[in-house]
Image 1 (spheres, rainbow, N blue to C red):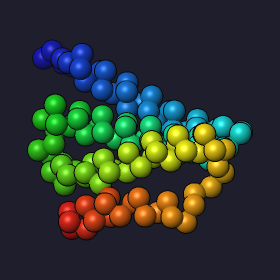
Image 2 (tube, rainbow, N blue to C red):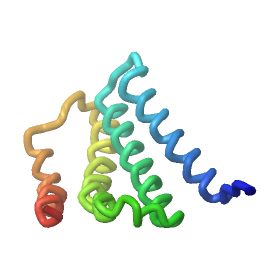
Image 3 (cartoon, rainbow, N blue to C red):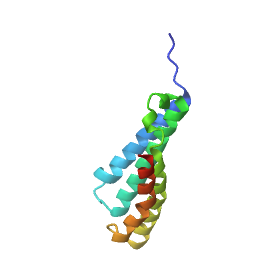
Image 4 (cartoon, rainbow, N blue to C red):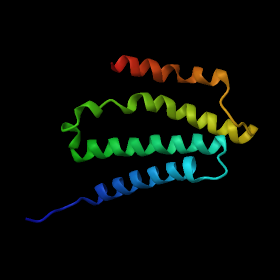
Length: 116
């Protein structure tokens, strides 16, 4: 019996691993601990999860984990928010979220409620 792993599966797996590693470096190992680093780390983690979801779809493993089929939907809305918050925190040197920033999460919350 010959075990065969597709090259795309290896690339997906490497991207997922590197995304998780970059998240850990930016959020926990980084001694600077700037707000922008944490926001960027969260964005990279979301991207790694998107790649993981694509791996499940591409390999056909989603049929064994059907509850994960729609889970990236709310994160898609949050990705744009994180890009905006990252750019703003770098440009203006912000160290925390503003109270109004949470309003940007309303579409993601509504999407998550729609999934329930």
